[in-house]
Image 1: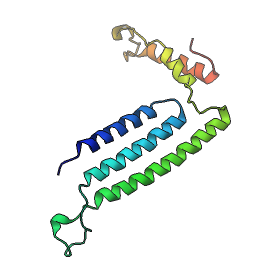
Image 2: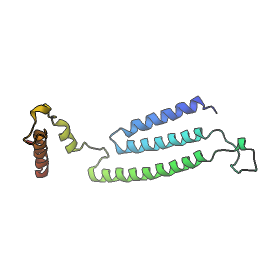
Image 3: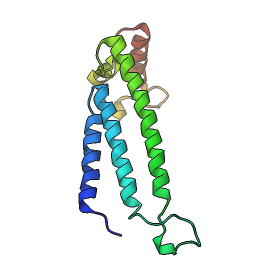
Image 4: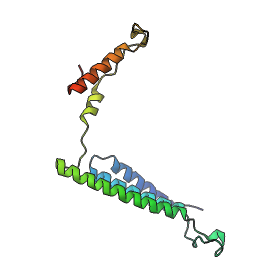
Length: 156
């Protein structure tokens, strides 16, 4: 069995475009990316199924002319999953548009705060507690960050 090069390139382009759209901030582009990935998956499964053949009824036709039903079943499953994910993302995009007036996903404030934090750079032998565990400064820093987050403020 050989795969047509044009079909393989088409599947590659569909996957590339789908993943590119998934990485965008707009929920509508993410939705279109999921749909394009679903189409690419269906095409890939149909290519993997091989050329068309006879119905898979043993005894009526020779075994070499029978079509494998598994790729068709997987393609049907992929269609259902893509449809369910599409409806969920449509509802999510609509809800986001109603609440904020646009469908762009914003950065999380907590993620930005964590990315700005400086990692502790002390050597391990300098951080020895009285009990010898070696993680006293790190625990105190974690306690300060957790306490500040509980109060709603930044770390000091």
